[in-house]
Image (tube, rainbow over all chains, first blue to last red; front, side, top):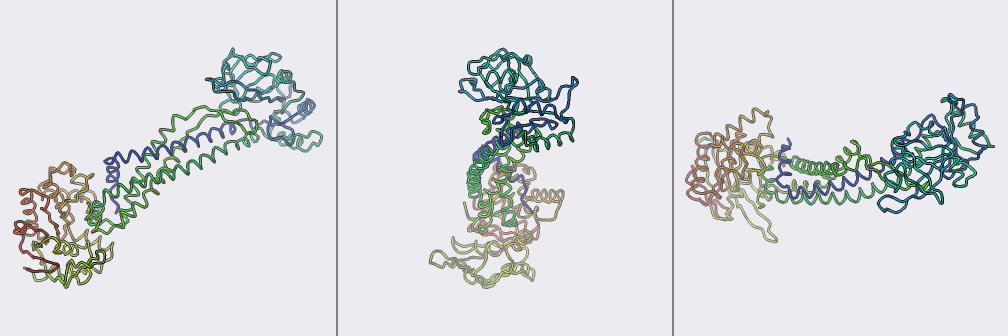
Length: 387
Length: 226
């Protein structure tokens, strides 16, 4: 039979000074690990929920990112008139040829400059992306030097409010609206008219084509047709699949999270070990007494492991509380394919917190193992005689 | 006095190794202790009286010789059997009380019962009976640091009694107490042997304490001298 849990809880409370040190130490480790993972989650989410499963993105064969792709006007015309492409009520092909350009803009609060992605879209571009909603101002008028920026970018860059301006070389673009892209990758973009973009940046060609096939069967057929047409030298892919692959940018952060988490948890294990050793040392006679009363070695080991687990579990909960304010915090990271700043929100989810607490408890249990074994190995008589 | 001894000690020796030196703590001790006896083990420091008590109570092991308690060869039990045997057959009272500081009087007394099959209400009843016996039913919810030394030792006696063991061992139980508290504790131990049928073995070097017992055994240099 095990020792009552209240024995462990009260010991944690009574020894609150040393308990606090361990709790805060483990709390800090757990907070860092949760925040890093929340960051990776956010980055994954921003590319993960981008796109519409009904859309197909067409880029040049061999290009890894949209920004590095070139699509001619002939290509656009060919693709647009393929049978598989859906038509809207006006009989127009639901397809948008787009231009991707990088511009630099000053960060708010004097944080230097950062790259941001400018997307020139043709009139169907908005209709192809129902997840993007106008939240302030109006959409740009084709043929005008007007742009609409994401609300999130508006908060990060200087002068990105509605009525503000954006400089692209010698050209000044007026910001006429803010959109919200629901946390997707488009939240890191500035949108304008594609032909306007081609003229400002002196581009003969587009970067990509986004197209909506009539149905699922048409989608498959379109992908096959584009892929197999040697004349086109284009690659077609479901839009969501294209963005899901961009998730790779979260990988370095995941690696850092694991390395940092690993190193810090090693430190935390030693901290827990230290606390539990001190706890065992000051309770040697108590342990002797429990053994005299008939409690087995195993019960003593279990009790100290549980106590370490409780202590670290509290630390884990503290870590979650420390990490929680980061939930929803918006930040930017460099997209290594486009070199543009990609915005994402930290996502401290319940499952991350549960994992954090479980991680903390395991730190506590591992850290308590040696002290617990030491406590149990002591011969009863010498434990009793200790002061 | 009953015919069968509850404790039979034969040719008991205990030799400690201290550095390169062998220290003889007990040297061929043989004694019989009978049920309902209240035996005081006396002698100067280092005479081996505590060692004898510890071996009889199953918390230390002899180098040679045998100890039978209620006919059971204590040396023949392994570590976990010994723990279980102690829990069921021996009640312990220490000089320094050895209560668990974070637990209340009631919880301290309940500890040995957690190793039995008794359910919660049965345990509570036994704990209350034991605390009433030592006159501390009204201090049940106090922690040790809220009790006087004498009260703490009475809680410790209640803990020793709660499993209803045949044998109660006490190692200098009055060593840390004032005269009045010491007298209370000794009276309780005396009542245990006289009225409750327990066998009590007490180590003391205070002749006044020993006078509460039914018999005194004197040890010197590891041997019984009287």
